[in-house]
Length: 223
Length: 223
DNA sequence: CAGAATGGAATTTGATCATATTCTCGCGGT
DNA sequence: ACCGCGAGAATATGATCAAATTCCATTCTG
Image (cartoon, rainbow over all chains, first blue to last red; front, side, top):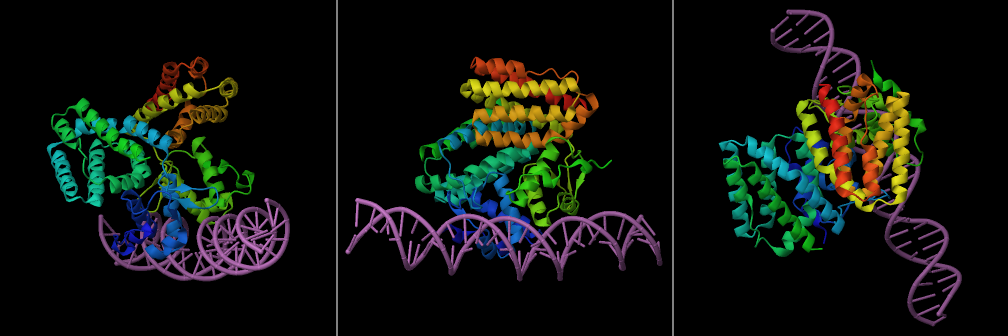
């Protein structure tokens, strides 16, 4: 199966942006939400056709993504979606546990009622996607939730680090959810929301720790 | 002053590597060791002349570096070396303290006699550079020391994260060292080496924490 | 004699460049 | 102070060159 078939269409993206930026975003989405499978080779010329741009923008987007760890450059000019092994999952877990609770703590210190409301809205859509059995929707809303939370934390450097981690496990998470389905995905987002409302820094931190552990365990077990 | 004058010459790099890779490495060194100053604009055409390559390799190297946070893309097609503000330094400190002690702990669990010996050799050269008042040499050996330590830790993902942090504060560190000189740079590397020999995980972790705090405080005070 | 391995073309893909196009900024005029 | 114009830099394209993989025929071995 060639899962590249359902890449986001280039035409759907916002106009006005430079082509390399559009290409980057399209590829990034494809990786985050599982349109590209782990181990899948990524060719420049294939993308030029699929996204309907020249090769220069594609090359730049690819370099950017490889620099972020979202793609892996083999020695011999080939680029693939990384396949995670046990060690990689361990490292990702350790890194996420080191960083994301800190972001949650910052967010708890800064969140206002509006932020909490927005997060709650996302979480509701997330629940809806789960009960609908909509894996793609779940992945999308889950990512949106954490992205919004990190935005509240207002820490661009820490957020950038965490974003690269998400890019690394995105494809594998999709595989896992595809196998397991969206059942038994008890989320700790509710705990987080409560902690945010109370400005409970330790509570927010703990909730995210739990969420991270849960998610990464799912991936680890699928190895 | 235009500090781009002393960029590493393109001809000095290893042949056989693709031009975009050579360009990337040259630029990376320039950033890490202060050949580029914070706030300095980086132009594509300037680099094509200076490094004697086409613009395509330069563009790719630049995208890669901006993805790593080493360079900053303004909205309007301009690229500059980032200037750190208080918030950025705080975040960098927090991120380094979250990650580097963990790498040190891993290293302590794995280091063998040969690793310790190599690190000691680097640290000796570092001391020599300090007593010589050689700022560039200090920066180089200090970076080499931490790079080697992280290599021992054998954790590529965590190491990649930390490397991007070093790229972010590299230019500012150079400025600070240029102002303060290399005096009063008491290093905690000795403590680290002792901890490694004893396989003292907590000790190694603490030594690196101290080293990080010390270094980042220097930068913070120069704001 | 059959199957696997080796060697070399052919094809596919990546890397680089020269060039055309588009956009931004600064300057001078109103 | 504001607006348009020109210089210069960045973006994007397609062509060209080089490298790597694949495929196939030949050959060696069991």
